Image (cartoon, rainbow, N blue to C red; front, top):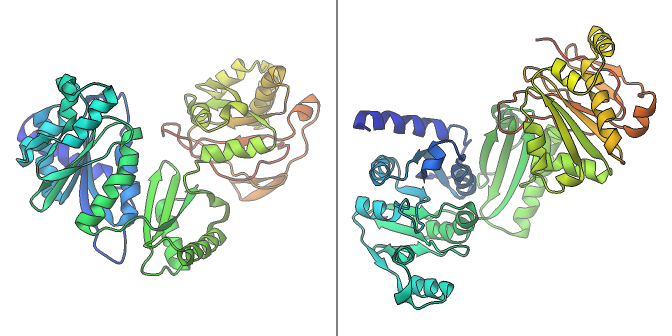
Length: 458
């Protein structure tokens, strides 16, 4: 790769990754840092980069600002070139991956060569390695012993879940930190080891009391504007925001973890909930999928899905939530409404009648309920996912459906016949964009026995 080509590649990475990180602390200047994620499997599309998301989300409330992130291959020269660019942008560079015992794990040596900081076996790590493998240090394989080498100028971060310690290279006024790649090792190390080190080195805050509110159906800028218009935030409150798809998280952090700070955040929570209402679907780390599963689970309900144009992403997303196996029965997936109708054995006459009366979505929900009711012994819910180009259908309490096209409401008479005995409540939603990793939903209460719905025209 030429220098000119490398420059373009790095520039794209820097501009693209941290664009949605949100706003940072008001009261003090943030410590800038760059993330370098190593791994050829990331560049080949085998895995997505989750490290940048975790690091920015964890470090931002503490007074650190990510100014760029990039992925590089497991090649020494590529990593050294990336280090050169990153160290020119920020005093702190965080590298993830490449600390293991294989030939592809080149991070330790590449950083040492770049910074000029030598490596040396650390006696404490060597002793731990020998104890872990139950043999004297002299009998350890060379590729295992290389994991005990730490910077002469700097320190190491304890790894409670693996053999690769984190490394801290102190290079003049700059610091390069190397973290292990597995999330189960990296994340506890960041919380337990890296954050205290950064506080000592850069004077960043230690974790205080924080409040995270999770929004859906509203844009990040709209939430930010409404908070600024209606909420007066004290100067010591740090505000951070993250967005993914149609979901937005806002985190409010205070520097201390005291009863008084808890009371302040509780009051702030109530004020913000009063402004946004049902647009806040959860607090903390609870996902939207988990909220849906828990609501249905508490009702003793099961859930059947029919998806159009989404490739089955809704079912896959819901299935990752805890206790999803108790709720999610399965999914019918097709590329078009017509193909979904055939998959669900909707007759030509019924389909023509439903199309003429703008009732195709409802008919597909009925058909899904019928198909699942054959195998299910408990009540089923049919969650109908419509074409990706449609808007979200809002869910509201009670038997009323909001007509989005004209802002009108229409009463929903109960379903008749045996379906209503097995399907006392039906939930209908629409995917905003099936190409996002997780679907965009509107949070709300499950509606009883919906009857009629008309989606807005384009």
